Image 1 (cartoon, rainbow, N blue to C red):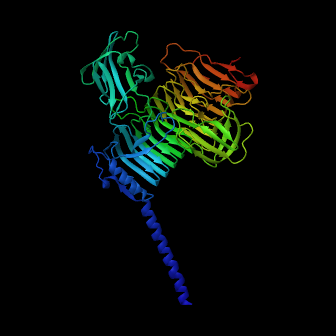
Image 2 (image 1 turned 90 degrees about the horizontal axis):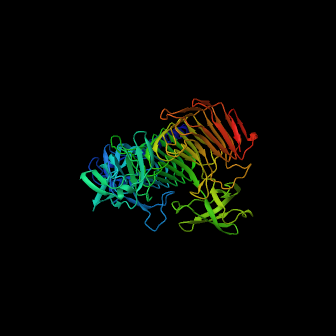
Image 3 (image 1 turned 90 degrees about the vertical axis):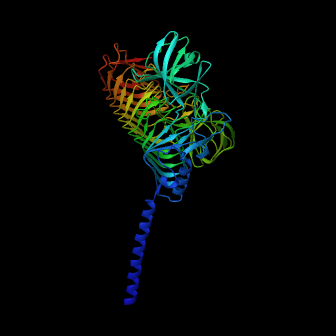
Length: 609
């Protein structure tokens, strides 16, 4: 009996010891720290770190739960010896036969449970490169790291003086140029501009607007000293003035700043993107993406204005939760945030199978549907969902087309020309505590059918609408209809400097209105502060249940004369516009079209057309 009891206690004790040892080993593995310096990468060496980075990432893949530690300082990366991968990226894949292989500084593919600890390291990219690509990976955190370009693909020059026949300029030292027979060309590491898309920054009001570089290209360029160039030509019809900053890019989109694809539970924290080429950080068909304290802005004291070639944060076909919290964007050539799905058009039908096609020339080449997904059939003219189905299978049959098969018989109304939306891959969105400034376009573009919260943000002098809720199946083919949007406690300051309106714009591109059936629904705009530069306050089309209340409206002191406020509604119902305060003088008149008095409850004057 004694021996039996001894055996029991012995094996129990041994089991406890082994359990603790196993836990200790597991904890040790979870805390595995792999240092980039162990793979030959030295900070501030100005040597190509690409080979060492690739080796270090391979070591991390073999040890899930590890942390890759970067040395504090500067690391340079060239395309030579960097990771290479053919990538088809939403909204930035040009429709041509050129290679889609990208050079990637940090390629995390099929990696799980990894922390990339930057230790405030600055990564300087040479040529056209993707800063990081996270592909088919889970539970990845990238933090405390900065990315920049040695030679940004946007050139900048400042106007010193202007005369009818000449302009004196200072070219930014980060911008490379050549002058051949009196004509200027802009070039970089492995590229040369073939066209000159130009946006002007006016430092007197921090505004950006579309402009032209043509008068400079048609003039005689004379280098008076390095980076000091005089242009002699016809400038009599321009409105250029000293201090204007011209920012010029070749608009060909062949890259992005960062890429997250087919991945889950990804966090970017305290990441600084000082320049991104082609598009910004693109998340594509991924789940649960958090951007925390991510900054898209030029390096401090760099003297540069532009940080992003196009959008800053772009989410295409994602699901789960998309969170943008305590972020900052300044100096983008396009929208700071864009969240959308993609409409594909039905081109042929056979039994329960369909061929669907990518329609926009910059979005194609990736899987947009998967077996088990739920889809909606969308009328492209009305944007109304006609019915739903569940997919049995889906496959990419070429770069432009997918073959999808539904589980049951197709509904009889399905025909060529209708569009398909993937309603499974639609995210909830939280955008809070962030500041968006220095962009010539909109602030946020939001089209998702799940819950959206936009709160405690500052939209400062966006060129166009600070928030646009669209949905279309005829131009960009970006889906879909919103069903639950709360916009609260934000400050909209002097937006719409170059668009004629700073209003929040709810503008689905439905070319045929279906009275009584709305594209968007349940949008609440409450307790915000609007400091107006333009007269627009709210534009809304085809919305069911729209609330605009508790908002404070005032005029900026930039204007000597105040315009008339405007609220414009078209084919909306269940609209409530009440209890807003107007420090801008006379309250606006609500102009309602294709509506009746019963569709609107307001304490303002109404004009019904």
